[in-house]
Length: 119
Length: 109
Image: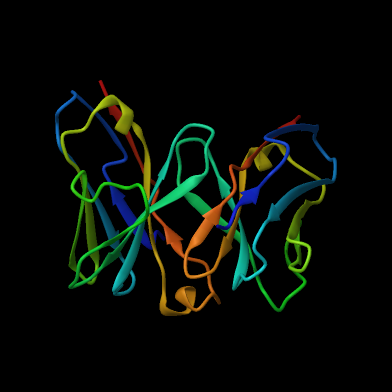
């Protein structure tokens, strides 16, 4: 069964709307979760690292005020795209690493992704 | 800065053919290299993980190799099937995952 649940899977909304995406770890508690973005025909790019109980760490070039991350509990991280515009349209996907994943010994578990389309 | 390259971007083969997908990376300081499968509009399925101290890993019809010193990995798919059609992503891990753009494989019946 699924280890990571990501919701919603598809969002279409008007420009200026804020959109919240949830990532839930179903099988284990996760102090760290990762958020990626994938534009068409491009690589998955790490946007930020979500840390339970502390601020998220953003990659260079990612606006922290635009992409709000809240790691509310050990099983839930949310990504809110604030005042979304057409250029924010992309495929957003989260991953949940185990402790051994962070040590490099196991793969991370990925959600099914959220396709965001801003009109 | 780590860069991962996968060439070609797309590949079409007839069913039954054995094929090799290539991946190269610029920084050999990695903990592991991973191959993923991504179906259209879907998330990632982990196929194989090769730790930096290993040379290869096998799972069923898949075999992945790693030459860390030269910054190369290959994914070998034996006896390809139409169900293998998907995008195959290569990624290297060193505190975070850096992905290639992927190779979109189409296996023709």
